[in-house]
Image (cartoon, rainbow, N blue to C red; front, side):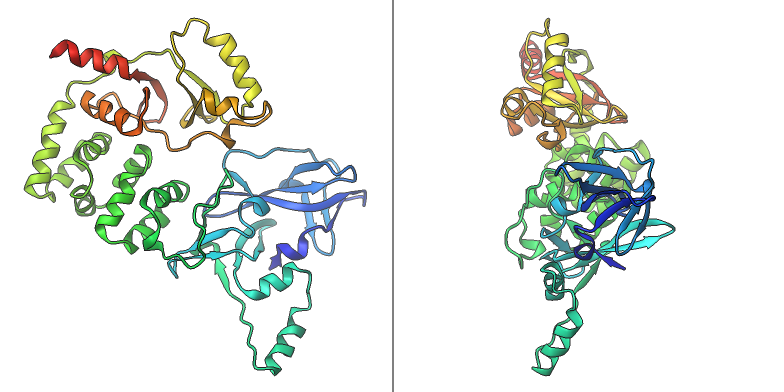
Length: 405
């Protein structure tokens, strides 16, 4: 196993021993396997270069890469080790608490490197401040009856709280998981896999867990309920607002809906059935295609250029939606948020990831409630593949309802 503190600032050479600079960071996949995909070096001109790990030959006293390497860039599902993990707070799933990362453990498997876990103990701090002969210090302190123990958490037992935007949501080190605000915990859960989300929800009491689920975006809610057993879904739906419950319900298969209904109490079941009946009046006729989308790696400068080219005939432009390379909706931002950023800032750094959405089958009254609840002027309508079909504005909805009164 390797420790990042021991690799930091090591010299990086090409295969033919041409010095390129020093190692400053690793880039890894924000996923369960935490594969290291790129290395970040600082050259002699103090410029940062990102190089794919496929060119990595050896990590030892020094680091060697192929001489015909190409530079790369950070992608959507990747994070920096230093910026997004080292010294940051994490959830210890086993201990149900927040701890601090003092060092990062790296492991090699089949010529690939992975983040194996993190050191949250004092030994990790000693390693970081370049006191590398930790064992001599350990023996010295042992003679004084002071015991140092290595505190290691494997990657499977943790999840970073600080992600791509670099915002630490929790400040107190020993804050218990149950004391985390539902909206903060929901914001965190949307960035981890379903398996770990279900583990965390099991730790909470049913009402707190339901409150957390209510704060998740509709796409993540849908994924959760598709994975829940019918009886588990019914248990949570009892404590979720009926309007929100129906919106989730409509994204599930008919078979799954019927299975869940069997486990619901009479009152919850009647409320959901009533709202399901209302949902037969779709809002597809109200959709407008007068909206703008950009890609998450676009810069502010590129977005402004696109606005100038594509929105000349728009009556209004409240929000700009963000999609990934598969054209799936992944974020949203307002013009005001964008204007405050530098022209070279990429969209993914400031976009809001928790997009409030509706579907073709969402009842009009639920769409309006969502707009009022979140103070929005428009909502994107997405299909089952998370692709935008268009948007619904508050004016369109209220005008349509007033006509029927």
